[in-house]
Length: 185
Image 1 (cartoon, rainbow, N blue to C red):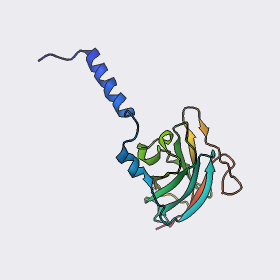
Image 2: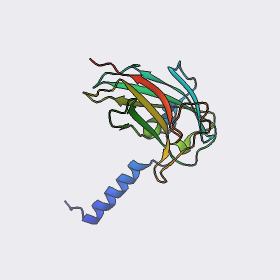
Image 3: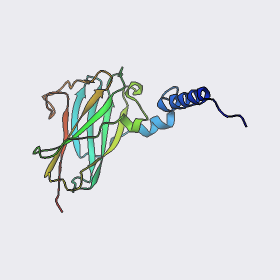
Image 4: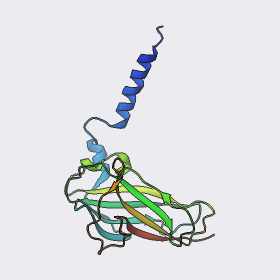
């Protein structure tokens, strides 16, 4: 049996990683179907935040609606596409103690589990994005603020919030999606 050379191994590894990073043609029809909804379910939070005149955050659900230290909640956000996006944005999520007693938890992620990049979003679609938030064991927070926005990692730019007077925000294109009560057990 012939042993592979270092060069052939490097070529194989680079080809394999190229396939993992981005599939040709983008999201498959099945992946797109998983990421797009035709009807938004009842929401626990409605926002209407407009990012860059391109995306409206319709709202979200948080299940369960309160957390205890060591527990996780599932957040599902719904984004209506208003105009095509020219960048592949990351959704940034900052989980902060409302009283400032714990360090921020970052839950930044690619939309729709990484299956449907924002440059592929189609005007008129509503994209569903699900992620989990977890409160560390022993945390003493009484309430958590969940902040959200769009971030382009290559340029470190945020997609600008266009209606800051209509939604709770910090003036830096970061909206306060929801405040989650914490129960101590």
